[in-house]
Image (cartoon, rainbow, N blue to C red; front, side, top):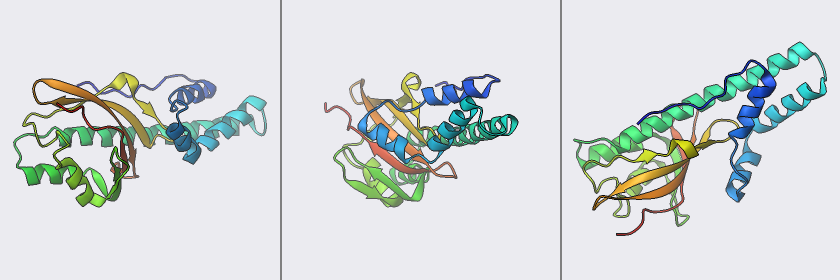
Length: 203
């Protein structure tokens, strides 16, 4: 599995802002809510507006924009590393049930929220273990379970802390099922909120 951070490379700050804008979520209800709740999005928009209008000190404004971009890129890179760690944990082999569930739970913060497809909110690492250890989850059902994130459809929140991921889940009988999850990471790169949108297709 090849991982890459699809960042644009350009010297002009306005082009970088455009790249960040293109990574925003599509205008779904949940996506809009996440965008409105982002603390970085207003800063980016304000900096872009001032830059385009030529307000204030041009050099200072450019430095401000570049600083915002660097901060967002750092958060996004940390989130991507957290996502890699998550997929590595759920793909572990050679462990007993308890050890694998513990390894998965450690990729979540202690106060994490995991929201199931039916809307039930599970709290903390014990909640994480109950979800991945349930009969509806294929994680513990297959000895060689290894889900694949669909990189082409990944999207990032403007502040870089949330990643929307389409996942190809392997199932028994040489089948697979596509599901969509939202991962939000804390300052340590641990998952603090995960929203699961669908269970795998039934047999």
